[in-house]
Length: 385
Image (cartoon, rainbow, N blue to C red):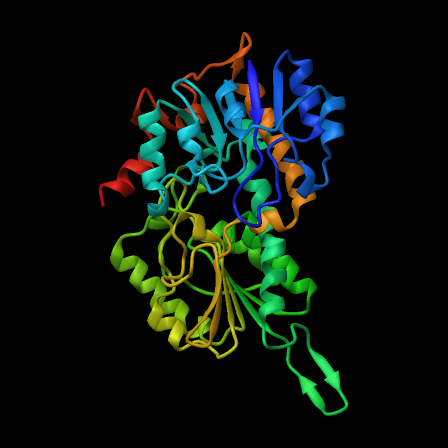
């Protein structure tokens, strides 16, 4: 099996899909590994270390893609400005692509269609189910830990106020208020980080168990008004809410949202478009100088006007829609990501090649395109809307 690791081309993306440590494991397992020269440099993994681990360096990006049986990436395929070609156009039929695709997000639909047209077998990491036997494959959880921590730091940097309570010679400054919407792995890490920085924290989640975890970290719970039977899907995930329930949730959350200095948005429904919880009209009534960090942006975002991939100020509120927040912690996030990728490839490999057992829940959830068809349920649902 030939495994190829290209350099990431998204602006500001410093992660890479394999480290010298995981390359050494792949080689020991019998794989041939090609790494694009310089791919690991932004995360402080040097070319010579990949060579020592058993990889072969290639400088020709197109050649790298052509050789691969399996392509390991961090971010979804993008247009390569240097080559004047989309990364999908560098791929060919039968190749296996493993990366974060976020296929249900409307901004990625054309790219997913292109993957199907090319005959690529595309596996999306954001589809790995959160079940016990998939824990060490779950890159989304690993990256959510990074996003929760770094997302709060980004917000603190943009905030017009101090985060902690300050006692000064001219008077007292009250601590900032931070609300987390969607208390999964990222949300819990965001709450913990905001508390460390001295903020008063609030939390909202339609799942009672998730909200209980948030309160254990000292956050004040905010009622969403969503009954448990509407909120919880199989495996403890959040469900897609009907329009009336989502409208009621917005109504109940808004009085708290407009008093916040920072709102951290991380509410997701696996494989679906992220629910819109904050509308533009709500943003208009938020505190001047406040900040929204919308880490759900890869799946459309929880705020209606979050700019994908950018940070912008609208209606006096700074909106952070950066799509690669974990990439701002390149060394730690790369180490975690590469371990998850290695474990997933090993899990899927039988007799030296990737084999997908479609009776296996993990394979079912991560498969996006196969045999020139889009097969991912959440993507098909989103495309038909």
